[in-house]
Structures are given as structure tokens and as C-alpha cells.
Length: 137
Image (cartoon, rainbow, N blue to C red):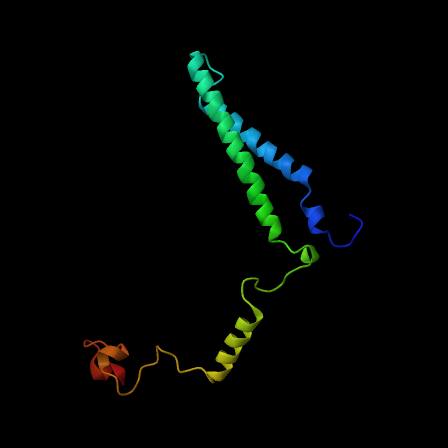
């Protein structure tokens, strides 16, 4: 990588992609063999069944890992690979500008909701019947 920014080709090296997928498949196959009791004394048919299942699980894991990593690498912009992003990623610039404009157009903040209105009944203002008008003054 002699360039400052890696290219998409450098990010998706086939040897690394296949190697990681092979390691994930090997791990899944070994876990399947151990969990199905392949290394214990069993009947021959049980060992063959465990081996078949482990090979199927390893193949599925290999293919799924290749597809998932490839799709994740397609989401990366190679030119922006090393830049630091210091803003929300999922909010577009125009949405932020629209939200800022709506906030400015709303004007000053409204009075607090917990401040009682003078024409509201006593129950809505938070005064209880036990306190009565004498407690309010």
C-alpha cells in the first residue's frame, strides 16, 4: 500500500477474504464435530452422520462469511477509509438544515408545562383539596 488511501482492490484481497472464511468454517466444523460426539466411541453410522453434518455446517459458514464480509466491504468508501468522521452518519445534511430551520422558525420556547395556568381548576394546578385556598396564599 504505497498510496495514502487504500483502494477497493486493496481492501478486498481475495487471500485474506478466503482465509478468514476458511478459519470461520473450520471453527464451525470442529464445534459441530465436538457437539455431536464425533470424538467419542460411537457407532460407525453416528460418526459418519456427525462428519456429514459438520461438513455441511462448515460449507454454509464458509459461504455466509464470504458474502457478509464482501457486502460490508462494499459499504466502505476507500477514499474515506482513514478520515475521522465527527458528525452523525445516518442524518443527511439537508435533514439537519431542515431541523435547524424548523427550530429557528418556532421562535422562543413556550412556557414550562409544569407552571400552572391562572384559569385552570385547582386539581389541574396540582393543589389538593386538603390544602385548600389557605395553603395557596
